[in-house]
Amino acid sequence: MRLAITQPNFMPWLGYFELLDYVDVWVSLDNVQLSRGSFVLRNRVRRPDGELEWISVNIPKKSPLHTSIKDVQISANDWQERIIRRLESYYKLAPFYQRFEGQIAELLTSNKNAPGLAALNESIIGEVSSWLGIEYEFYRASDIEPTLEGSPQDKVLSLIRHFDADTYCNFAGGIDAGLYAPTAFAKQGVMLERHGYAHPTYPQHSGGFKPFLSIVDLLFESGEGALDVIRSGRNWQTV
Image (cartoon, rainbow, N blue to C red):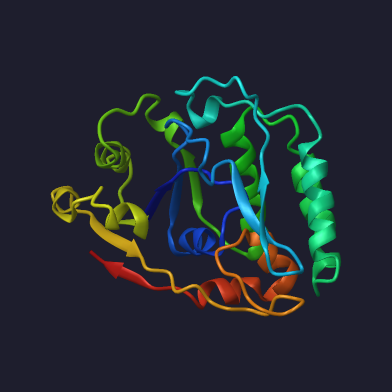
């Protein structure tokens, strides 16, 4: 059984959904500290001129620095409507804008009363996964182990003990930074796999191509063919 443990990002990129498509179980790492510059709060979209801009979740500016992702409240202003208007401005000429604009608008507005940032992002990820035809078992780290301690590796290994997983799948960044030692996983009978995603190209209206964008870009540009595009970049490596 393949297991992934990741922070719940906002409107994630293609590789995030390829990870979810590859594994059997996804654990949302919702009880670690929020980093304000992270993709948990924001992601990138493409303007018609090819430049990139951020779409972001609004949170109260006075949120304590050490607040866990699950405990971060989302602002009760009109940030969702601002994102919807921005997406319309940037993507109204994209081939599948009409197909997905209503669904994405509903996805954002229906989560206005989400109990926190993690719940908001988990709901978005789950719904978009269902549109794409991606299936996995979902768990929250906070439900398994409310308080996680130690290094990133200690936290992950602690959560892995709750599952009968033989493979742990992780993004390249953490592995390349030396946060995880294959020998530590091997001691628990778990193989470590590195996400070496080869980002695919796909047509983007108005020409040119920019990678590493929010999934909304792919949905507006490729429609029902999005999952095939996502899977075409699959490249997992045993560490």
